[in-house]
Image 1 (tube, helix red, strand yellow):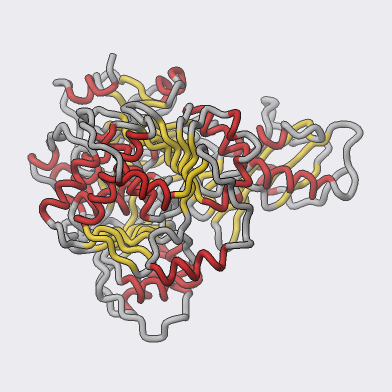
Image 2: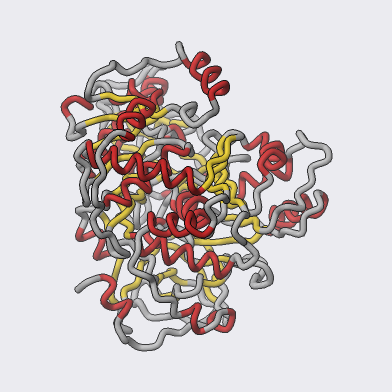
Length: 577
């Protein structure tokens, strides 16, 4: 059975106490049969002179953006990229990332959005698991791909520099500053710079793009699902179109010409959907920040003056503690949304006091979501808010709280697993049928529900209160770290017999990974921990590398023989050798 046949068919009416905050038309929004590219093109037709992208002081208007997208689409087509092909984009928040995304979307190809600071083995894994035919990557990353790229499935690599979209003077200064900082790729047919590719693309013949609609796969995001094993989440056009409409309804004061500060990365569901695509679908602008410095958050606000900003709690805490700007006026802010982790009430009050002291009527609210439902599922906004809640479901989304053991809906106020029904649900995990079926389940009501593995409760008005994770996922500075993945990497080292990774508190990052390791016989010594740390740095993204490695003779166990993670979280002892 098709995942969406249950969602769209006539089934039992779902309970929705939050429906009173929406009109019937908003609750029953019909997704037009269009693509992400078509949404941005429509904005260009309506608001051709509006600024679409702001980047390092440069402004790209909608008309210019569409010309660039169309040019690059022709270039991709001439290289042999066709509908259904997967292209890995591994870039920071630079214009080329979005231009490539929409150019691929016009062709009907799928953009695999990946962390630009991924470790060598992670890059190889994402390329091979998606069978990507092309790779668009940050030029400083060549050293990480040179050992395997020639024997991989990748036909061609396009290198992008953060300086490519700067004005001539800034680009010259940037290029000079980077000359000796990293190993440069060879000049061959297989390796091409963006500037050369773009010029080449302009002279390619016209082509008739294939018909792409709401059900065409558009993007691959990454998630650990409920098991913690990294997975490729396939998202269709429909999810982005539906999410943009839901966010337009909730963020009612957001109007064409407003701007969103994209401090969340493009490989993150919240960043790509809420801070990049939705603004472009609504005639607003997205302010791309390729490298975010939390210590200069207030200075960034002064320079960019965004209307809307979304981030994790630790970033807003950094803002509330910043002192760079003595007379900062934040009156331009309309919406400030926190997601990715719990926002303690004390921090919420501190941040709101900061806004009040800086001439802003904006108040921070919370949202909740995950990649499998294109990030934003619930949101508190304006006066539709309750302290401590993550808001109500976006118009057209449905949430219920169930007993994980029986799948029966629990009473209002009772904690259970959060499950989601939405037109923005993922198509599934790429080549992971069993994992997909575990995450997307048909319930007795006839609808498909996404099982999140998260705990929470709903009140009688439909507000959702997030209470924590069933899974052991660690959130560090807003990034998801899946312990089983870190454990798998460490246990591949010949010195490691067994290990367990837990999240421990951190004063700024909320949590960081801490690894407890049992060594194989014959291994040890004063350098073993440093060796393991270097091994992690080679095979894991920076934010996944354990902040501390502790050597243990054995791991603590529960009465059932399982590793006792609670004891490990409380373990502050010295190494045992």
